[in-house]
Length: 233
Image (cartoon, rainbow, N blue to C red; front, side, top):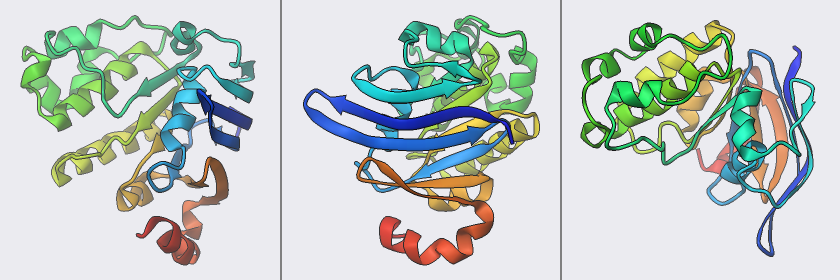
């Protein structure tokens, strides 16, 4: 599988606090990869550092063969990487459809609004509702949908199921599977191990700011003792 995202020796700091300690990881084109780990081990920091939100960083980040370390934050999306943060970032005073069409299309393969509504029927029903009227699950759907319209090649999700009802979690899982069938590459951080085990191709296990294991979904049964010890699953 052709590597789309490659991270090597990635270090990051919050002021004087050294958070990432030489993170190495690869995400292949069309692959769905999940980073697992307890709270506070550096999972979200890894995503934010890849995006360039955290600028105190050192190492190598390559996307589709392009060095991303020197790319300004506002140009990262134009390179083909889209990020849905845990807080979602919905514009509360805009309607669902206004939120959808606001971001610019950065590539020619952006998903049309009609196709987005096919993926997320809930959003079609709420297309005229302001962000303040949406449930947490609907906000998460809108945050993902808004990125898809821009045409990015790599979708990065931070805790997409956090705090959501089981029926919404199931729906988001179905959408991610459909996106993978379309060839979308997805990197996500997820605390819900059972959700991740149903959708991911491969896993990275993170502890103390480093990746300590990398394994495909087929090895999950043989890894359960380790995962139980590290994650408590």
